Length: 172
View 1 (cartoon, helix red, strand yellow):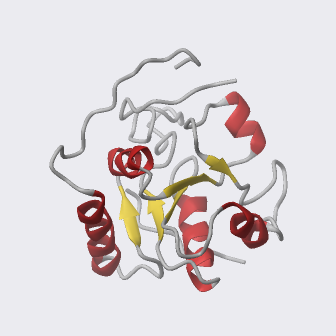
View 2 (cartoon, rainbow, N blue to C red; view 1 turned 60 degrees about the vertical axis):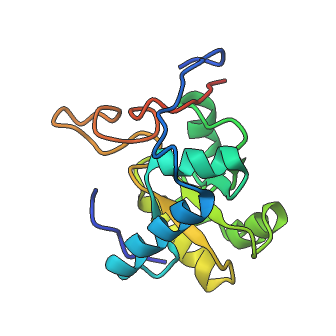
């Protein structure tokens, strides 16, 4: 499967306080913003969220955060506490996980909004697209991913992403 790519865009005891994306924004307003981005970019799924918007929906219980990175990334790079791990592709695998949709369905009903998170927003774009084709009514991509885009030195963490935004995360 060759996904259509979107345009580019702590420690366990960490007590990082997340910035409020918009203190007055309700979950419904955040979902509407995501949908508007989806329409503007003609995405094949509901829409896109900034990391801060995804955090707000996650903490409100208004959508399930699904980390589609590998178990290795989740363990050694970090993860968002309370997120679900459903690997898009196993570490070292060349093809997507053939059980991805089955595992997603075991974790999240199709009528519950899902937010896909990966390293930079590419795998999560593909995961949101497949989830939508498979029946999830509100599948979204978290822009910038967990680590963001590569910088001039070829490293992640300085150009966007969940961690760069100062949002809470834990590491094993």
